[in-house]
Image (cartoon, rainbow, N blue to C red; front, top):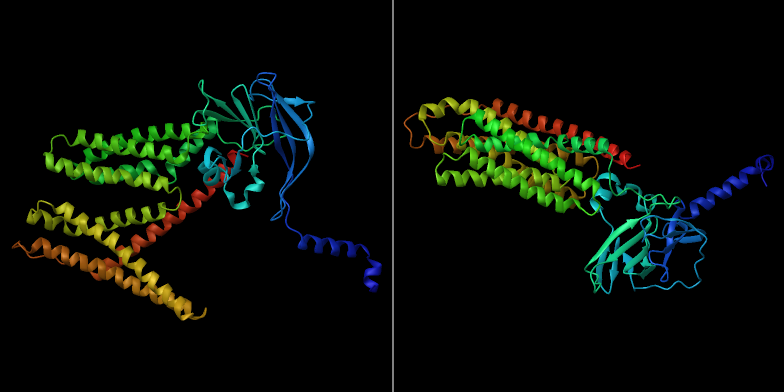
Length: 474
């Protein structure tokens, strides 16, 4: 043995422990786990739950340790207390139930699914660290027992799943399910609902402000309705409709947070229908003096505009930067082109001057990103095909950005030229000079720079909110 190790023999133990840690799988913390259940068929309402340690073992088979204690209920699972009951060696299974993918299966069909998946996975319990650190459900055959029209199933760290069969002829299509763990003091189940009024109010506030959903909806409706009425009336009418929808959204969020049986996407679907209908009704009231054809056209445009916010809400996080990019680009180019052509439109008395200007803006804002995206895909495909080294890739990216910049300017100026030709082709008034090249460059810079800053601020704010949401359920 080296002289150094003779003087410090404890280092050998440390070294061996390090090797053991490196050679073994990572173990998660032991968790109290409902292993089995049994209903007392002689005592109505009584059932027992067997609690053990459950230790995740990486890729190895998880281990379930010795019995910790047994819980007993006398009111069909609503409350539990500790019991001296001892489970038999062989525990009968009432139904051939299995559990996988967070769902209970019976003969090839799902009879129950672990609720609030979006609540758990997306908003309040992101799965970055793995589910074994949050909750553990059984796998494979599911321990279950039934008596007096009630079935009990062991649900791991979440307690006992209780199902009440309805009707004289019980069927699996008519079962009222509930996760019960009241009184199981050794368990630490995750929260599937939030009932604190302060927390609910904070979540509603954050949901409506990051991003500002009422303002986005108000802006979209206002831009459509300015074709049918004065700007002031369109602004006030859109504000009233957005306020009504904000109250409805707050109510929907409250129901979703407090009821674990209400899932996210069905609620989004309901609010989408409500948003479109309320927007159409509000627009119809404000546009009642218009002709039928124009009114139908603007109603269709109102419905399409009202859909944008629910689409962003359905995508949760990732779709808002593109939406901000398009809306900010539309407002930036609309201001630039409107200032340039407002006087010309008044001189020519063009009947659809505002729509033509907005159509030009839409072409620029929608077509340019598509062209840029296609060029980006081609550029990165070429880089991957040529297998260029790391020194050439930055130069290729700079070349792509420069080329994309000129494409953006060309699309903008070409759209503007075609737009002006269409306006003056039947007019004796000469066309006004188009925006200068420098004006286009400034407008594009304001568009891309402003959208990038707002998207970055929104990303940081939403990241903070996600951390705050996690704290609310800890």
